[in-house]
Length: 339
Image (cartoon, rainbow, N blue to C red; front, side, top):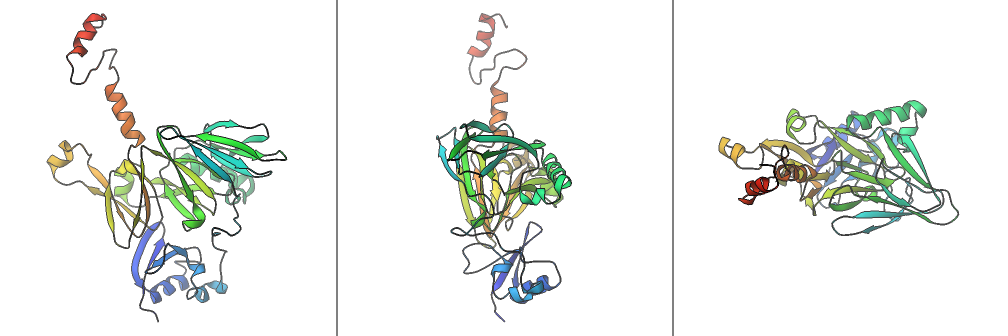
């Protein structure tokens, strides 16, 4: 038996390190299945158990559902081409072949060419949400209500003979992240308001944060969005984006609002900042997020909540001008009759 130490992603949490025999035990007792992600030294990324040769014989029937497609293979989600325009106020243009579709948040569309048909639907339009017919679609829509998102999503389909284009705009200054689920183990956890659009076939569900601390103080609540499938998806990030690969056991502490997305293998918890003076007068809030690898995380330099807070503080309050650090604030109110 190999002496390699393994990590597993179970119920959205990282478990390990553990010997190979313990992974096998989790498979045989039903805790893990072929779609469960595992990682060990020497691997470049997390992979489903069904793709690891030594674990396949222990799966029920010796196999499981096919793993997510890999680059160069045949995707189950629609294969779309795209181009991102702009620097600080970006939008994405998606090129669709005849019959191809993209799914987006309601209200995200910027423009579309003549051959694109637009349809508003319940849920996310993926095969996963449509399997149960009307009930499956209603459950998909219900999951989106729990995340605070709109009840509806919009599907844009090319019904013309040639290629057609549709564009989606980010709702605030920053960057549009491109993430290929086929190369990320088939799953991604992201902030509930960061998803912009995706190839049809990507499932947009929910990921519960089971720890009380994360739910109450994590800035994103008990629920975050979970993207599943093998297609391309795109997310909003405020300001600049910084992607980090965390090694096994490597820890990173970040402001809770600066977290955009993470792989499900990354352990996400909330930690109190420390002493009373630091907590109340440090200006960084009472809590920060603790991320522990292995796995990849994406951070944003300007969360929308921070931008909104600065705009609110700079705006005139109850009809009076607010000029920070300037005697002209009061003088201006007198001159224009507000004083």
